[in-house]
Image (cartoon, rainbow, N blue to C red; front, top):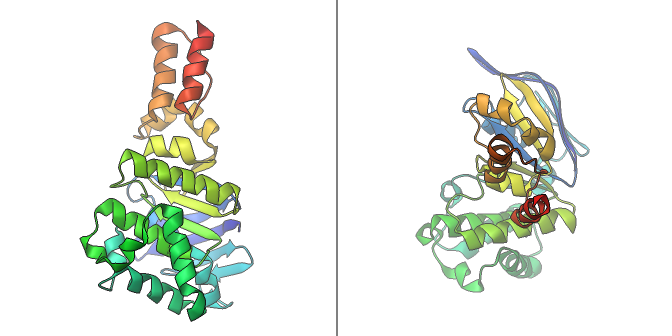
Length: 277
């Protein structure tokens, strides 16, 4: 599902957050949303989740339209299309077992009771967690486990759009790799539209198809990650860190006059270095 913000205004009483914002999140791709604090990233997500409504303009998500009047179409049907994982998943837990958290989500969307268990087991398998987690207290889990459980709950109702805020926080290297492989599979095999808000630039460099950077209520930069990271000096000037491989490429050019191609995979970078010898 394509997401499009069209001439969108959003403001607080004494502060304009978005001023005629126009941006398109492509269908079936992984888009990473960047911006400094106060740039509107959280508002952007909350508008998609119907927690806030635009003051003017429209948001189109597939065939659904969100305006200042809300959504004229079936709201529950729309919410079923949106999977969301918070930066702080523990804030969304209400029950004393993971199983009850799953069931509450599936009951909300009126899933057939006879098929709920299958949805739950499939979702846990996708994120690499055993069925033992169903009987654990979600508040007893580590931050990384909480994040994976929340991702599984979001996937259990098979949304077309997946929104993740800071998905790598608390994950060790192995589980981070699990999430990367999962998101790539959701994109390639299931054509999910995935929107990620993150400051983990190495993760973004590896996972993103496109990057959107917000600044002063508008889109400051938008494009393929290769194009965005090619303008590395501008990013650094704005206070953004660079992915390690982009920094290495810049260092090789500056110190050794070696011009490496853009790479998002370390193995490809090594091959490029060997070709220079």
